[in-house]
Amino acid sequence: MEFVEWYPRGYGVGFKITSKIVEIQSDYQRIELYETEGFGKLFVIDGTVQLVEKGERSYHEPLVHPVMLAHPKPKRVLVIGGGDGGTLREVLKHESVENAIMVEIDEKVVEVSREYLKIDEGLLERLIRGEEPKAKLIIGDGVEYMKSHKKHFDVIIVDSTDPVGPAKLLFSEEFYKNAYEALSEKGLYITQSGSVYLFTDEVLEAYKNMKKAFDKIYYFTFPVIGYASPWSFLVGVKGDIDFMEVDLDRAKTLDLEYYDPEKHETLFQMPKYVRDLLEGKDDS
Image (cartoon, rainbow, N blue to C red; front, side, top):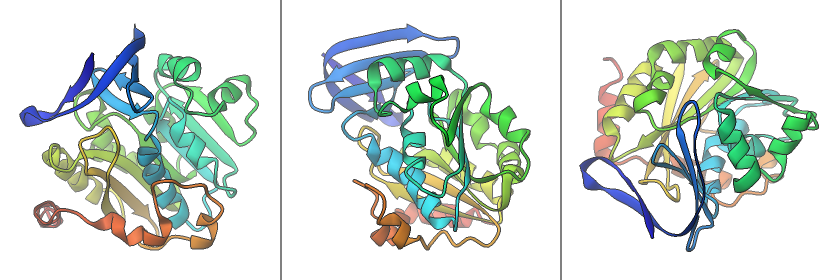
């Protein structure tokens, strides 16, 4: 048995499946969980790979730690989406965090992740019981929550599905401007933005929209297990934070497997034709 996620132009990423663990239809999306031959559990939403258990940190680490280490002291953090718990798990590794809020619209994602996936190391259960002193889970609309908290967050992390279909709103100019307003005087925003080779147009569109909202933006890539790599990430800066520099002393306190803070500069390698397209869009 196999599972294959098909990308544009007939490109696929596949796994050998030994069993299906669960499949449910929530009010928002179809959620599936499989056991794979060599990568543990495979988490799928609406036919697209969200993560594989043995390799999920190749996504969560670059999504979280570069912005957390570039910010001088991230105390208040908002995670939009991320119902599997992996992103918030990484956020809470930073001692400076005083208050982290995760807003997930689909309660079923949290339920399946807590009961079957379990990459969160018990975090979701503690959140539901109110036993995590630095963090809170809200089931609701992250966009509306963000809009109601002006100048509040040091870091905003959007852990969403790909920049196509229902998630496209999260890559719009209006959304980015709302995110900018929700950041404190000095703040960082990050989102995954899809496959560099196969979602190039979507990456360009998101980049163009971010340019209209933030003081400065950065793009970088990372090879994510289970995705059509290289996978792109976009960072928006409010204030005078230099995202090219990270705090290596703080980094030494973290247990990291994939993202290497000492080689932070290697994140910024982008295929030349994509870089040319991005930089050609600067003034558009």
